[in-house]
Length: 363
Image 1 (tube, rainbow, N blue to C red):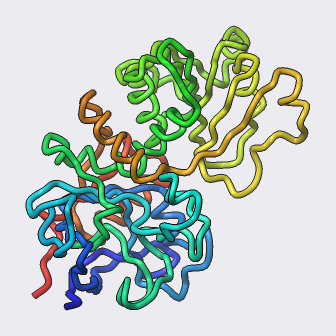
Image 2 (tube, helix red, strand yellow):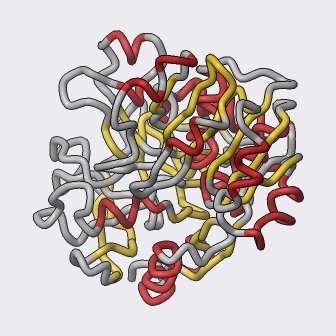
Image 3 (cartoon, helix red, strand yellow):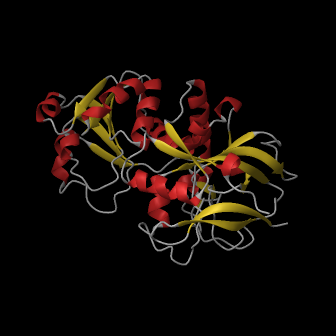
């Protein structure tokens, strides 16, 4: 039977937040019903809900959130991967076509089949899958997801600071694995924000020599505390020139248009810059001669598949890696403030909603 749960939803493109009752589908044979404990706030939530990445005007009120951590409350009769009471996580998608080449290879995040991957929120889907015809995300009391798209989380990771790993963590881990980054290599991280600080922690745990490139001198001590061995101030020409051709890889997390040429100069020949910041326009080289003479590469990366996400959670549990967070109550007012501070880069380094403890229950 379809059931109701409370949520905090975006009412319009201004970012106004409201409590909103949403419907979740009945638990099917392969489904897992998760009672949400914590939900991280990702900048993608804001871009999507405000219509900055596409028109969502017909989807309001929209509940976003794709960094979801909670406890299994019920399971379908065919579920074998989870039992009631397990700690479980849900990331950026909740289903895919399951039959395309990418899905079969474990890259469900890259699904090219009919409808593509099912984004955790804002994705138009059949009524029987998502009551209301639109996926609703993790700023809510409960969520129902097929077991094949749920992450098993070690008990010691059932903490608020682990929730953002379901997006921020995999957005770092996946390209590091896909590009074969190895211990002893020099990894540059551009931008020490929600993604950047996780790239430093994960890269250091992999044995890389991590260099943070930032405009902000005040972030030096933080970067070093996260595991960086070097910090370069990008506005200091002397420092930038001294670091020329020193890095095997650069993880670029900047999410606005910027000149990437100074960063390309930091790469060794045959080096790779991995782009993860969503920049609709700008930032790419004006021509190919920035790349050709030294065999440089620019690569994009989009989260990761379920297998890699599970690997990432297990890796972070082994190395005691979590995000640096600020916890907030599950109220519309608190989320509005958190969104404004996120846009202003006024958070160290991720907000997490204390959902189970503070979201009002439906009467």
